[in-house]
Image 1 (cartoon, rainbow, N blue to C red):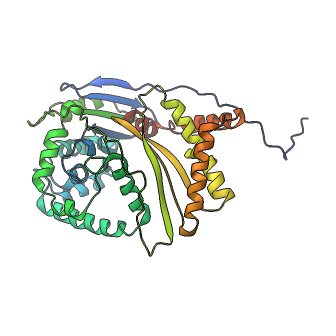
Image 2 (cartoon, one colour; image 1 turned 180 degrees about the vertical axis):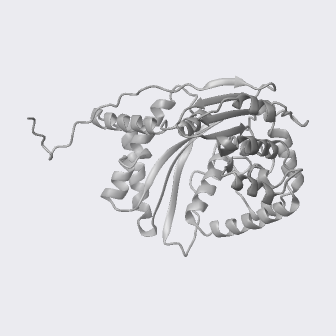
Amino acid sequence: MQIIDRQKAPAAKLLEFLGNIEPRQIKLSNDIPVYMIDEGPTEVLRIELVFKAGNLYQNQKHIAKATSALLAGGTSSHSAEEISEHFDFYGSYLETISGKDNAYVALYTLNKHLENTLPMLAEIVIDPVFPEQELEVYRANCLQHLSVNQQKVKYLARVHFNEQVFGDKHPYGMRLQAFHLENLQRTYLQEHHRNYYRAEECLMVVSGKIPPGFEMMLEKHFGGFRSKGGRTAGSAKVPIPFPTEKVRFIEKNDASQAAIRIGKTTINRLHPDYPALFIANTILGGYFGSRLMHNIREDKGYTYGIGSGLSSLQHGGLFVISSEVGTKVLPAAMKEIYFEIRRLREEIVSQEELTLVKNYLMGSLMRSMDGPFALSERLRTA
């Protein structure tokens, strides 16, 4: 019988990748592409529509987010309360998200209730009216949240960093101010919806246990989706200016912590060097065992958490290091962060560390494909 020495950690080795599940693709009669991931044992579906309608396409700050948030605020036939009660009655959940590039509308629903939930999803996507009273409530809530956030160093660091990197005129960098919310008009939301929530710029991702006849149901409720005039969204190209302000300090005398953001624009996932950059970022600060965590948290004890990340955007990318540290150790923490950046740039990564990180990333990749909904998340961001 083999005796295992429990005092020695087992040797690390690369996991074996078992492959991808390819979605099935169809097109509705109006040419909307639909990617279908027919997996899972449970009679439930996630139906998501993706539009090129995020911040990149807005002509005023917060218009994209407000349009997304108020899609379910009312249609020509149903009020916000009726829409909410309808989905609740059938045990469904509606989710609307607006990001830097895209806007997402997702419905989680039981298959047995598709005949009732799918028409309502189509209605809020195609025929929202953005009632004035719902906009008033939304505006008041956002103003309150903004007032609270402006007292948080973490929030201040994030919005000022974006403004430094992208510029205060770029949709990615423009900092939200109270007057942006106060000046929100119903007509602005209607115009953004008309211009960018278009069949020509839409794709759908469906995941879960897809029932027989589902394609016919999609065609029935979305095949007639036609754009209501306005301009074609196309591929907005907004130049990203070269940042001239390298360092910015935001004074907050009553703060016990200092929030740090360090970064720059970079390549996106379409660039051939992106996989190498992704691995380098993981080594630096992309997981709990990273160099930044080991140095700044475990060794120096300056922070509870620190990390680095990459955002892949439509016309470029963003690299950022973020942390919150005690105000008294801010200079020392900054010194160690730049030390780790230089070390990664100037020293060759050992084979042992590289193998560990590659194994971690392989495990993360496999976890990100665990189940049909996780697969659809990966597909929509591909």
